[in-house]
Length: 90
Image 1 (cartoon, rainbow, N blue to C red):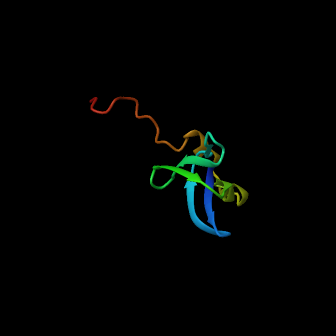
Image 2: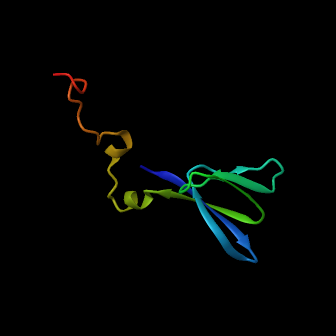
Image 3: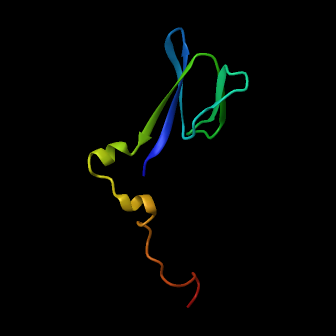
């Protein structure tokens, strides 16, 4: 299944100072000089003001291009079959 990942880079002196990843597109702050997003690893809210760049990637794209992607996984068809009863029923 394809999942979009955004890589946010904060710049300082023309060099990348810090990078984060997020699953949702960053929100532009009210005053228009920064962004806000939820970090993929820590699940914390991050607000950045200053020079930044945002790159968008699709995870899983390599599997599709290599012919290794299983379309059944997109629809949950890899789940075990229903056993026809609730757990605990005898």
